Image (cartoon, rainbow over all chains, first blue to last red):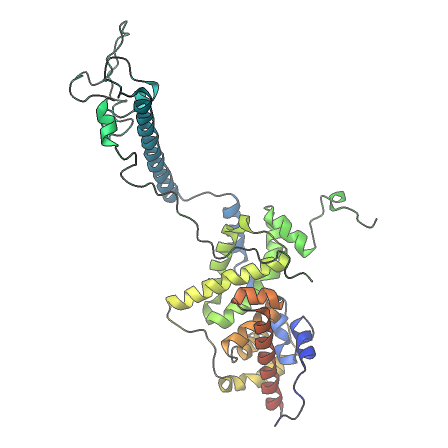
Length: 185
Length: 193
């Protein structure tokens, strides 16, 4: 059927490696046509945005919010772990209200599961007290035992109620390890 | 001896492709533009055979992802081309899944009509129409052959890199590219009479 010999492998290799193509295919390698570069400015914008990340406000807020949640959860774990460590070391749980709470307890929530800074801003300004202020800022020492046993009870597992989910992992298409050295040679 | 270190001319912009890429990776706008112009036409033509008229959209998605993941890239321009082709291929297949379509390869006979035109315009190799017709010819091949030819001839990858893009061995890519080119040559010859 074939009038001429089919192309040899060597001939084909030459074409594939950058040698001349049949005329009807030569335009495959022609330089960029203007219409083909329409997306250049958009690509450059993407390049700049990736270089100097300026996140969209909403996205940034979401990310910050998520980071805060994670931080609070981690802080909870650390504080609970610290309390347990104290209990383990002393053999007793610290009694409430006798001494001012340990340094870590100053920032602890007033009740298990409470938000760390919930009570802080609402503390009424007091006149400079000469005596030690009560441990509980609410002024009702009996209501919630500040940082006493209840703190450990509510965090028996030492885990936050919701497992912290760190930031979303960017979708990597494929590791660009293409040109290590396998192709040289 | 001959090495007149690149430092000696810090003001001159780089011209070697690999240097351009290095400058782009370091954040240089002009170098990025230059790299884009080197890489994009082949990438776009490859995508054109895969997704047809949506190639522009898929290409911009590809560049978005490439720019975002640029800090994780290491390598020379050949590696960069291969990486862009890989990202582009994934974006193209995603796109086809989204629109529930198969890649646009068509039976050879339907494009026989374009052969005459392709031959006529072959002299004007810079003509965008000639490129389009040549791509239409490639699109008549079975998909594995079309992709092998495109990655080797149009994107400019070697057989090993093309194999990585396609998830195949270099030998399989070579065979597919041979078959594709032979088939096209046959088609053209038969048409020429």
